[in-house]
Length: 234
Ligand SMILES: C[S@@+](CC[C@H](N)C(=O)[O-])C[C@H]1O[C@@H](n2cnc3c(N)ncnc32)[C@H](O)[C@@H]1O
Image (cartoon, rainbow, N blue to C red; front, side, top):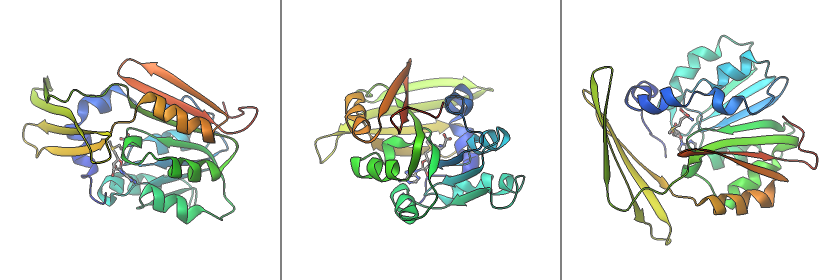
């Protein structure tokens, strides 16, 4: 995926979710102070600012869509030179680019995006780049949308929003989720990603991390995956 949308449009039309799930929800689960952090599919979310304000040693933000990174470019200059780096890369490309380098990552975040790229190959590469005691934290949706398109309508700040979501079998026999997000006055955004069953996440993660916990918060699951025999990060 090279173009997702612009960051400005993203925060405008996905306002309900942005307001409901603050970045601290994931960041609070790790000790980021003095740590090397990488945020996969970061968009311009404020995980960067939160981590840097909490004393992170370094922060790398990765996103395949340059227009989604744009808002972070300016914010980056608030922090000492070289401590924050942004990369317009696909997740696989980002991990391969870092293979064989000395730096290891202590904390990895991926917020609202793992369903775009999850595979055992990528998880294995990611775990191999993490330090002993490192932690990988991500969230995802808990339930497969129905195969019948469902319409959700709501109003925020006087503007009407409409969402349509449903699932379709893909050519590999799995399910893809299709989502259309519309806000009056704005072009709609259409996206699709794989449905990954909670057990499928667990099966792969348990092969590459020594400890995996799933926190169930209504329609959202948060996974905390620790690398090392003594689960050191938090
Ligand atoms: C729903 S947005 C989430 C953005 C941000 N993490 C947040 O929580 O606001 C999904 C993001 O994933 C990015 N993305 C999707 N697939 C990707 C991939 N394979 N590699 C890198 N970025 C990807 C998109 O460009 C988009 O910025």
